Image 1: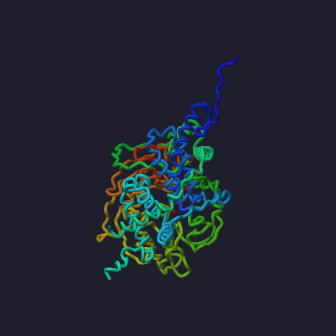
Image 2: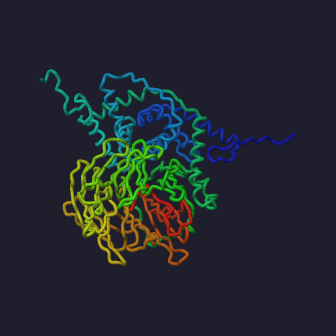
Image 3: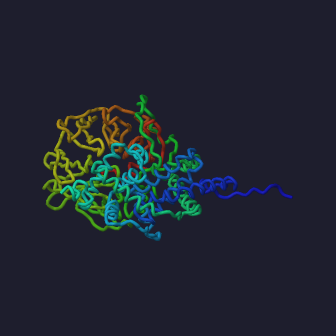
Amino acid sequence: MGGESVTSTPDVVTGEALPHGRQSSRDDEFSSYMAARQAALLRTAYLLTGERGAAEDLLQTALAKLYLSWDKVRDRGALDGYVRRIMVNEHNSLWRRAWKRREHATDDLPDQPVHDEYDDGLGAALWSYLQTLPPKQRTVLVLRYYEDLSEAEIADVMGISTGTVKSQASRALAGLRERAPRSLDPRHTDPPEEER
Amino acid sequence: MTQDQDLARRLGETMHRHADALHDTPLDLLAVRGRATTIRRRRHTAVGLVAAAAVAAVVLPLSLLPTGGGDRVDDPQPVDTPTPIEEPVPLDPRSAPAGPAPRVPYVEIDAKRLLTPAGAYDLPEAFPQVVPYRDGWIALTTDTPSQTGTRVAILDGGFRELEGTGMTTGIAVRDDGERVAWVEYTGTGWRLVNAPTTGGEAVTSDVTTAGPDAPSAAVGFLPGDHVVVESTDARTSRSSYRVVGPDRTTTATFGGFNHVVSSSPVNGLVAGQTEYSGDGSCSGVKDPLSASRELVWETCDHQLGAFSPDGRYVVGLAPYFDGLGSPTLAILDAATGRPVVEFVSGRSARSAAAVGDVVWEDPTTLLATVTQGVDQYVVRATIDGRVEVVAGPRPSEMSVEFRFPAHTFG
């Protein structure tokens, strides 16, 4: 009889043959992480991009980069931060957006609109204004007011100074305030009935 | 609760209402592995532009790094205050190790190819400048005879021209790529165009009524979307400068420079040459919006280039050099002018290297086109004194083989 059979498959990370067991272990770990965190990461991607299809595409790229770096990331507790950082950098890169425009011309992703269960007018208006913000301002707002990151954490994720985080947030809020309907602008909130 | 806090609270609630409706997990391992394979191949293609013999030794380790290969910096490190390196660092591309592909775009002039962190594009011509703009691109094109030799063209995603402008001298691109400015000749004078690249209205401002023999140019951006504009007197050939705001008003005028080379949208400083002696020069930095407008510092040891994206450093070149390029390349403290690190060419005919175009790859890393002998390279030079070859060598006989397309031309 022959000796022990050793199977190998081409490794996605290096392109070289890798013992099946080692790749399988990595894939199992990665799959577990995906199963646990994918929905939450997709929500962040959706807020960054404003489109379901673009969000999936952004998340797919970020997870692929995490997959390529999986063996190098020793602090498993920092995985979300690592993926978030990739998504932010990917989304804010003008060069990548240009590349995506070209790719999407031949590879359109089907859009699956998200059902907005809440819309009394105010939410829809704010959501609409959020879509018009420049990517970096929008990113700061998402990280600050959805992810609840501190200014220092946002600065770390975006690779900018905390001063720039403050100025981007301030400019974004000022822009929202200027373009918001009068009813959304706290400076113009009408006094309660009993105070009139 | 302040007004902004209330607005922020409402905004947070809105984001939660929209995003929290998403509970599905559309991606499986197969899809992620497929995208990973594409990225890995793209990284190898980009790194493959480096000399093949050197690549064999480094390509696999680099492709494994989170920031390696053709990627943008995914893991930016906080910038600490570096300790200046006292001894000059040899600038010798021929013996330098190969490094990962550039994380900023560059153009291969001969091949008419634009290489970006995301992928490569074939260009209809080797545009001196080309950057993403709205749904396509904006480029400086040389395909028309004019006194400046160049004009701006708005292109679609396939690099087909949608809209052209009058003659211009170059496009100023803000470090984040989200704003561009140029000055174009209208037939009756020169007009500044200050435009966001991601959509929105461009702001135009008349600069001078001078003729085409007295061109104006956009030098760069200052904080608040202000633009530094250079105007040239046709009779004296002297340059004057003004700062034009997004509201079309001129907020400051200043002089004291033979030529302003750069400005920073972060620290608000401009850098330029203050004196030229024929075989040397002095350069300085000033804040054009300050009350005194005095030079913050001046040096006769370096000519100056671009400020780093965080405004902490500024490029230093030799105080005098011929058309081939500078024999030295330095990173200077933008607040004092003191060198933090200086890369110096060898003096022999074989080792002599000349620096051409220089851009910042990140707040502490430079990329430069360097000619050595009959070869041209793209070289990475870091604040901690490392030199790597990231593209080339390409045969060069006093010709430009590589160019950074976001860097102001001329």
